[in-house]
Image (cartoon, rainbow, N blue to C red; front, side, top):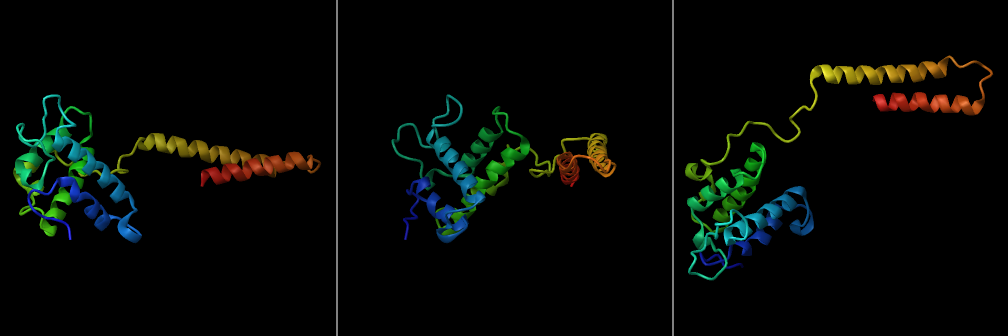
Length: 194
């Protein structure tokens, strides 16, 4: 059973959390696990002072030489991390929200597992610096206007129709190889349309 004392280094909990959230035998697989591992690594680097603004020294007091521990966490840490994510790094609103949610989910797991007494990442003061959630999810955004989509589908329809017509009006004495090429072009155009 892992040590759950306040002096436990943060990254001592990562592998167990990732196993609980992962897929497959041993919890070693899945997109969530991979993405959460990346964000937990970034959070650990930030907490240690290895990531962030040049003047950022991490969450451990300057006069102490050790890794960040659970004893160092409180809502101020998560508020500062939210500021870091929402800073001038060029991340979109929903990306900042997603990255923070990975860390917040880990924080909730830490409460359930006894590493933390409270879910600091979900406190209003911790989340205040996050950008507003615009409600969009990845894949929701449409790159083309309805006119552009209509023009594109009309063009593809015309190409498919032309290819089928070119095949169906071939003279009887057309070379079999040429006939095969036209048939292939018609099938390809129809397949591309689908």
